[in-house]
Image (cartoon, rainbow, N blue to C red; front, side, top):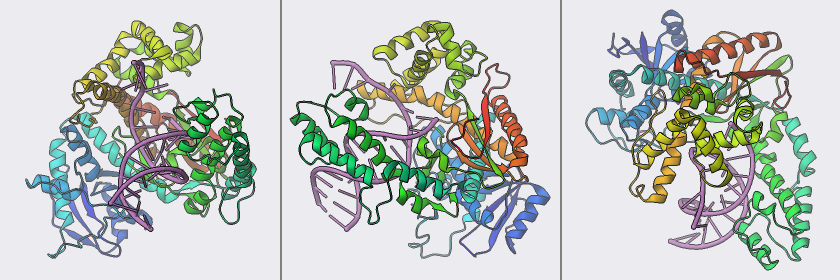
Length: 529
DNA sequence: TGGCATCGCGCC
DNA sequence: AAAGGGCGCGATGCCA
């Protein structure tokens, strides 16, 4: 059974409608006496809940109500719109309902800071819109459209992702403000009382000034270029990798400044004050926020936490973190996708195994070669390495080369489960733009399939851990963090391995390609195994 | 003052 | 001239 649920605005009654699996209503609208009734329905029927959008689950979670399965109409509409070659067009519930009724969809309403639709009904003079009716109708149309089993799996995984994301935000990532502050103080000096530069940054900036013999704002690329030009160094950018090769006394303090200034600006004390409350960092995840199906986040830069700050991620007393990450996920995905199984030898370190075979044991070369093949590098050393791979692994390389050709020709490409890339835009046939689109579609097929492997893994893991004390607390493309009482950590490690294998099987059936997930049980994120 | 593009760099 | 994919975010610099 399925149950469509409209949580409505805060404090309003929750309305539901029971549906058959094909979306046909089984009964009329029910107004539930409270959220406890949702929990009763979950216990009694374990339905697939039909939500309008990821945000719908938040009110249930706030009341302590968890559900097992969902169908997220907005996320599924995004998949279907993209599959129709209309990626990026409106795919909210209102837009989907309009499309279904043969009307032109309006742009999706902007969301306010809480993720609610901003000013709902502000311009609506008629009676309150019946969102539940739209939900039921659009869901039924989506079920009819989801004829392909892979797309059905993708729709379920994407929807499960929305549940995971809300639960992660509700739990939060355990974060020690004291450890974070200590790290900052260690690297930057004491926190400046009135804002401004911390002592270490002020010192480095002064050294840069002294080296140039005049004040230069180290945060201004334009000023730096002028200052270096005056000193006889004509640079085109002030990127760290370029500065490193410049022989000038300002370079050393400037590089040190850049690194620490970034830490201060992006993840310094003001970040700490804004994003960490009660020992938890609560980023807002945006499921499907990236065209490839990767998640994005809104605020807090959760997917860019610098490695230097990982020591601030600490389990509660008596609890542990289980850190699980997939080793070399994308090349393995390419091997499974293309059927070129020689690309993924049965080894924990794929790069090392390939290096031994093809690159005289040079692991760095093997890694660069594979990444370059998936990103579309063609120049210099990377190009030569890719050429070597192309001769030895024609099927695997042919797969990404084919995706690149499709993209260059303006065609659509798809992930393994059927996520579709955005269409070419006017002007993409111009040679430079066409090659850029080729690099994008080349990477899309791999990155998007890797993202759905990770999504299925998350969904499986969530179901395996359901009802237990372990919580999923962080997810970053190919890495998952769980927070659990120390005594259940071994069970969580087992669940992670099981979920990874299930994800492999559900995507690729009996492929011999392995997707090893290394899990370590630690007190803090920066601890080695 | 606020919007916007660009740069640069953090993560994968 | 050649050019490696996807993001979020903050600072700068320009504009209205």
